[in-house]
Length: 426
Image (tube, rainbow, N blue to C red; front, side, top):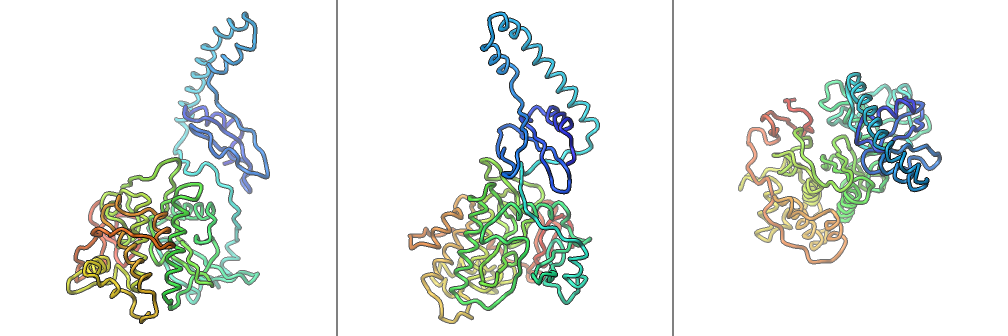
């Protein structure tokens, strides 16, 4: 932020991987330095404005191009000067890099090359007035960040306001990550910054439409958006419903952005909610699009059964919701898991298809799970669906504390379905 062209040039020269830089106008922050590394992608920053792009070129190629356009005498001179110029450029770049390295305290990794957002900013006084000074009467709930309050702006618009908690294990970086990801995405099944949530008793048709809507939203994140995004914290409490009962995926604080052809990664800091995390992620920290597929499968089974995976506990035999559904499927009694509040007002074939797809999504081996594209196709069409293999997490839950979750790194725990973000008990 607030870098001059000269400063931006020096910053680019100090890194041999820097291929170009530009000075861009940032609302409220004057000017900023935007740099590219390796391939030039997303060079069109803003359609309403234009910026000079300074590109690093190979000194030998430049010399060769110039040499061809001149006479033989100039060719000879350039042939001698080119290596000297290249050497001088290298020495200057090396000197600049070493000098700036000593002064730099920390360099933040660039996750997104460029993001053109149209965010509306509110003063704290406006937010305080909208929520009646964050009145407990306006509190909608709370999550890993802190509490969420219902508010009404001066123009009558109802909003949800998320207030960071001082004691939250999540912090500024996760909050910025969520705002950045939401601002980048525009899709009918992804929540925007202003929305509301409410719960109603749902019939089967509405439940099925919600399942399909969630699947399409995840497919957009995995495949159709400009950058591939892995949510990493998909669960029913992060699905909001609008006035028309359309599902909106929310809470992108844990989301990871993949650029290029990357499809998977590994982390030592496992975040998410116990009961929705895939086995390879919970145990080894490996996550990919198939991790979100597993979480979707859990949600699908929960929506069809009306039961939560973390709280359902079958006594005899002692199984979680996933394990219980699997046993019923093996006994060809899968429809017994359908929410009894629906009585018989549902399509048995459609319900059975949803249960089968849900079991495919929670299979133990990530390679066996379908992609979200395949999931959307199976939900939307009459097609042959493969038989699922044994799912993960069929183990017996603790009778004393059925909601406990062990952290991967040192065995410490997080309780009551709290999103795990730091390795410490809460």
